[in-house]
Image (cartoon, rainbow, N blue to C red; front, side, top):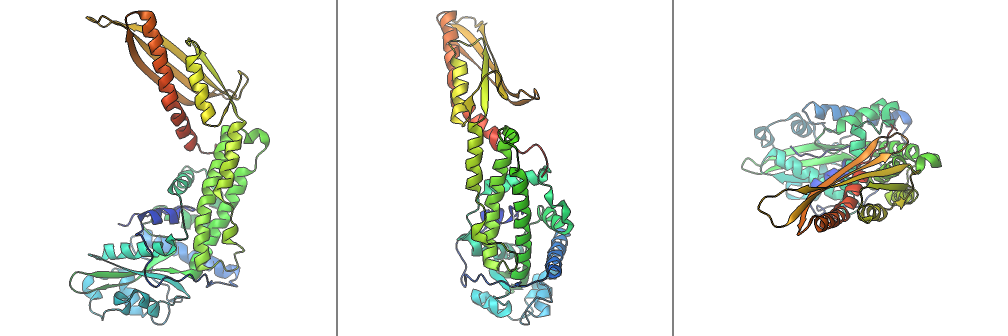
Length: 420
């Protein structure tokens, strides 16, 4: 199967990763809308139709081209064959469609004012459909620079129940939640399929502009509500690691909203009131997240340190990650215990010492450990004293080499503590 996972604000990014490079022939930059002036009832109907299509695909079938929306040229037998799972034998019992030899001719069957359509081919039907969907993705490629990290983080937030604001709109919720497990792009479908009777299979992927306009506009609006909820905080709430996590998630959502805005600029925003090029950017939220860390003091407390070497190594790592050094009254503290113990190794002229460093980053208000860290090693010299000095230097070097990355990995994985 063509694995493209599509969360509420991550659908296009993951598909782009799987899509083929380059733009197919016949691409045009029409931003015309197919749904200008739709009533709210018509919009809800379109979203309902999208949800029904999603459910149909989840049950193993393919969403057919809507008979009401399909142009006259898209004859019922062809669309029916393509969407109902007719085998290759049935598909070859009709003449070769014009779009097989001329990709742009797909619009003689599917009106370019109504659909975005791309043809694909492959050694079997599945590969042909995959290629068609990838080419449909490539239609957007030059104007969509999505970042997979952002979509992955937002998908994780949805699955962990952090993003929960869609519950007020049951239809939209069902569309989004179901799409997490689908193998296709929200708003897309396979409109036609043909087999040449020998070895080549062909398929057409479609996105109905009016339907896509409603779906993506609704997703953008829902994500904007999540961003507003995430960033609505008092200063006391803001200048915490949870405040940092909320701004980072807001940045990820803004990134994927920009991607959906690019889709909307192609299919038309209609009466949604969304101006794609004026959507908030993720960079602004990341800048604010960086300001938050600069105002979060972290105290470093070390037992059995040698010449403050371990404490200095940890403090430098926090500084490189954007935090400032705090005191014992800081909201966060790194509690470190260092131990050195002789190691008896028979038949060795040198003396050896093992070092162990246990460090726990904790929230002083709750007492909970946020990030545990442990390292150990062994160093030797002609006497125990020098062996201990070498062990302390080795611990200092190891902390300086890896703790900053450990801390950044922890921060990258942080999700807000409550639902939005």
